[in-house]
Image 1: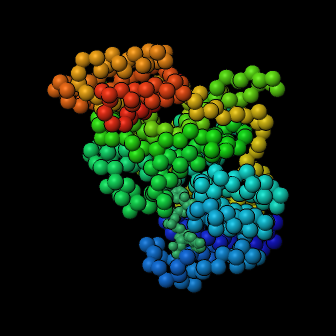
Image 2 (image 1 turned 45 degrees about the vertical axis):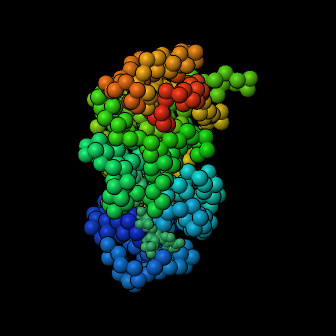
Image 3 (image 1 turned 120 degrees about the horizontal axis):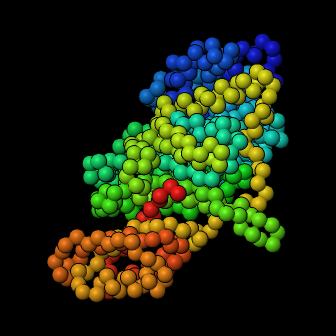
Length: 447
Ligand code: NAP
Ligand code: HSE
C-alpha cells in the first residue's frame, strides 16, 4: 500500500523507450494532467531503461531519465509501478518476475511473454499480492482485455473472431488495393513501427496466435498452451489468390478464431471443447470484418446473452499501443490508491475441463488453387480424389487458357475436416497434371 503522502502521485519505471515506450512517455507528457484530474493521481515517469543511452530517438526523453540498469528501478522504493516494454521472452521475463517478486504491479505490452509464461507470471503476481496488466498485448489500442475480463463477465463466449495483427492486415490491404508486393509492404510496416523486431512473428501468424491464445484463455477460463493453437501465416497468399477471392465475392484476412463447440462426452464427464486457430481466411466481402483495413484491428465477440459485439481500432503503432498502456497504468494506480491490487485478478482459471480441439478435427470450407495442365480429364482426376474422401466441390473457376498450358484452377470446397483435406492434397499434389504447390485457404462464414 502507498504511504499517505504518495497517494496523489505514483511513480513509474519504464523499461523500454522504443516505439511503445517512447509513445507512453509522449502520451503522458500530452495527457498526464488530464489523467491526474480524472484519477486524482499524478502518474510520473521516474526513469526509462534503454539498451543504448546515446542512441537518437524519435521521441525525445530527457537524458537525466535514461539508464541501462533495470535492477535499480525494480528495487527503488520510490518507483511504484514497473512497465515492461522491451519485448522478447528472456530479459523481459526476468524484469517482470523480479518486479512481481518485489511486490510491484507490472504493466506489459508483451504478448509473446504473456502467451508463453502467463500462467507462471499470474501465479507469481498472486503469490506476491500484486497484479500484472497486459491490455496493450492484444489489438493495440482496442481495450479488449477489459471487455473480456470485466464488461462481458455475464456471458459465455460462443464465438470470437479477431483481426489482431496490424502488420498482416496492412500487408493484405495494400496487396489488394495496389497489387503491391508482399516484401515491399512489409518494409513499410517496419518503417511505421507496426512490425515486431522479428517480423516473421507477424507474417507467419505467431503474433496473432499469441494474442488469440490470450483472448481464448480469458474467454474460456483455462490457459491455452500456444502449442495447441493451429497457426498459418500469410506468406503463401499470392496476388492471384487476392484477385480470385475478389472475383468470388470474398476478401482475405488473417483471422484469429475461437469457437466454442458442443461439449465432448468423456468417461470423466463432459469437456468444454474449443477451436483456437489462426489462419488466413476468405471472408464474405460485405461482412464488417472484411472491411477492416490497413493497420486497424477488430474483434467480434459473440456472447450467449449479449449476441454479437464488435471492437475496432488501430492494432499497432506507437500512439494506439500507448493508449492501452495508459489504461493499465490508471488501473494499477487506482489499485495502489485503494489498496485493492487483486480487485480484478490478471487471470482466473475457472474451467477445469477445458480442451483445445486438435488440428485434424477443424472443419471449414476451403478455397483451393492449383496450377494444372489444361487438358481433358484434369478436373475429373482431381474430383475423383476429393469424392473418394467424401469431400464435395461447390464451384470451379478455370480461366480460359491454351490446351496443354499450365493454368490456375480454383475449386471452392464444402465443409471438410482438416485431416481429410490434407489427405486429399497429398494425393492431388502427386497427379502429373498438377504443377507446383497447391494453395489452400479456408473460408469463414461467421456462423
Ligand atoms: P522497440 O521499438 O524495439 O523498443 C524496445 C525498447 O527496449 C528500446 O528502447 C530498447 O532500447 C529497449 N531494450 C531492448 N532490450 C533491452 C535490454 N536488454 N535492456 C534494456 N533495454 C532494452 O520495441 P517496441 O515496438 O516498442 O515493442 C515493445 C513491446 O511492445 C514488445 O513486446 C512488442 O511486442 C509490444 N508491442 C508493440 C507494438 C507496436 O506497435 N510496436 C504494439 C503492441 C505491443 P534502445 O532504444 O536503446 O534500443
Ligand atoms: N506487430 C504487432 C502487429 C504489433 O502488427 O499487430 C501490435 O501488437
